[in-house]
Length: 296
Image (cartoon, rainbow, N blue to C red; front, side, top):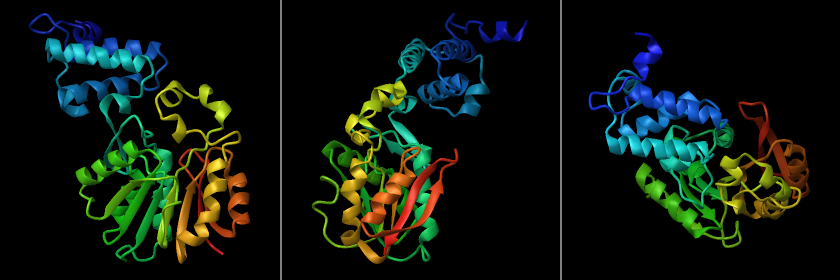
């Protein structure tokens, strides 16, 4: 029997096998233009079955029960319609931690880990009782990732969407950081008093007119106000940069995420606000993704 024939053979009860279901799903996802359709099909099916990828591939002849097959088919159809896998599963891994999502939160992306790396590189003593601020916290991924590396630190996450702040708090509870993290709804730093050792910001930075041209996974499923940075994508930086002088401690550090091609424009904005750029850090794709700032 050839390999393809074996993979699509029916299970003991006449239903679809794991291998057969994966073959069908890969074809559907590839036809929809999904990158890495095999990886995504395996992720969706392993989640439904509650096993890891190795266990999934190690038992290709395992028959799917009717409910499992129906759930998998529904997931594949939604993914083929370009709903992100993270939205289907309800979570996304970031900094090796799992973050629950909600409609009001962005899907955390590996590019944003550049901010975590940049901040950690600036901190001399990781066990110091640092005070952190995360503006536009979303799922809380930046703040909670930093708290996982800074055992004596505490932090505040602010988001304009109250539902996003609630999602971030739930992630703090699930990850065991609720005693060191608090979250609130607000417009950037307008209600914040006091000074912080670390500030991280991943603001909206997509040009308003470019949002409809984004990949459907982003443009149609991420919250628009978490994407829309105004006509030139820089509105949030203009609002935030002047606040850094009062929020950063004298020896504090801030990290701003930037969109592709924006680093020089953002640098000009923060310099006019009296801040010094100590590093411009690139992500794994080579894009200038993060500006690291200090008070002048």
